[in-house]
Length: 138
Image (cartoon, rainbow, N blue to C red; front, side, top):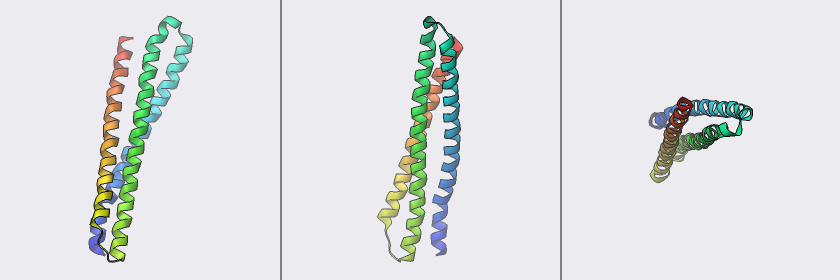
C-alpha cells in the first residue's frame, strides 16, 4: 500500500497546483467582468461618435471572458482527471489488478486538459495587452 501512496503523491500535488491556477483564473475573470461593467457605464455617458473605442474594448473583454471560462473549465477537468486517477490507483491496488492503460489514459487526459487550460490563459493574456493598447491610445 505504501508504494501506491507514493505514486499518488504526484497527482495530489497536481490537484493542489491546479486549484491555485483556478483561483488565479477566477480572479482574472472577476476583473474582466468588473472592467466590462465599468465600460458599459462609461459608454452610456458618451456620444455615439465615441462609442467605437468602447465597443472594441467590450469585444476584447467579451473574448477574454470566454477564454478565461474555457481555461477554467479545462483546469477543473484536469483536477477531476487527477482525482479519478488517484481513486483508480487505490482501487487497482485494493483489487490487486493492474490497469496501466486506465491509469495512463487518466494521466494523459489530465495533462492534455492542463495544456489546453494554459493555452487559453496565454491567449487571454495576449487579448489583455490589446485592450491595454486601446486604453493607451484613448
